[in-house]
Amino acid sequence: MAATPAVGQHSLREQNLAVVARAVFEATAPPSRADVAAATGLARATVSALVDGLVAGGIVAELPPVAARRAGRPAVPLTPAEHTVVGVGLEVAVDRLEAVAVDLTGTVVAQVAAPGDHHDSDPGTVLALLADLAGDLVAACPAPDGRPLRIAGARLALPGLVEPRTSTLRVAPNLGWADLSPVDTRLVSERLRGAPVAIGNEANLAALAQLEHRRPRPDAPRSFLYVSADVGIGSAIVLDGDVFLGGRGWSGELGHVVVDPRGPACQCGSTGCLEQYAGKDALLDAAGLPRGVDVAAALAGAPTPAAADALERAGHALGSALADFVNLIDIHTVLLGGMYAHLAPELAPVILAQLDEHVLSAPWTTFDVRPAPVASGAAPLGGARSVVRSVVEDPAPWLAPSP
Image (cartoon, rainbow, N blue to C red):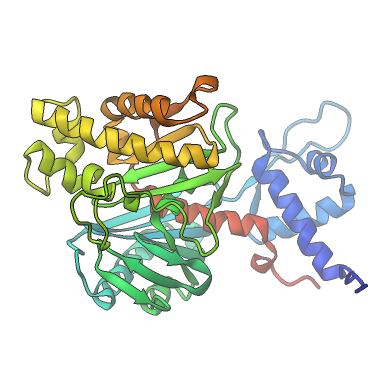
């Protein structure tokens, strides 16, 4: 039987730094060093030394002291540091590029976007445009006290089959991109001061934006199906606060679930995919509206009989596909993102009717279909938050070397 490697002193310090950082970030109110020691079970002297390192490294900040209830030194509350380290989220969508920077408090410190038509586009050209946008983002970030912000990393959201572990995009039908292995993000990284850039599926990253940044509200779902739409339809499965990626990161391709094998051809090569019934272009076509108009503004409230019929058709198809998901994975909360968030009053009743009709467990449960808390810009925001989360989970690389 192989012996378990001993935990070295350096590794133990790194683990304890993460424990203390999480205690500060997840506290319901700014804790003192004594509060952190009580919450973590670590010795006060150990906590004090670790907190000093986190403060010096710009991960944690000290608030003004508050008078102690008993005789002794005033307690110094601790809080996540503002404007010191940021995570960056990026997105390539069919009709736009977006970039956002989020600091350790969860505050958006800079955000930029550029409209464009990226249907059947050249990846190199688009990524060069994204690099320019990343440079604009860095220029827009504030620099308190004249110090430049440190960029912990970036997550790039792409609308397709993404292998995060190998930085490979297998296919993004609506962009016309395929077999980019790896996705070349060197120009983007250069404009982000050399910060590493990882890629992810846009729906999976958007789902992360629906979770609370630091601590969940008591009424906030921790397990849900997230489904959003633009030209395509993306979805994500969130289980107890974590996105279920599947074996290669390909889970959640709801837009290419076949709802009618005899239906219209899809850009993915199949026929009758959900996108052909409930995607943006499909909705506009069914409502007799020109492509390119604001779908939410044009269809919200079902202003015409054609709009009402288009929404009924889309909700029926979407509810049918979601019923299959619910039967398979037994999650009963659905968050509608993207344009669906704005059309939820029209879509949710139709979806609920389909769930009640087609989910086996319907007689013994209730379904919750509601707008996602973050409707617009969710993918880059979720990407930025995931970077910030990684800093909290492993703050040691951001601190000065211990003597």
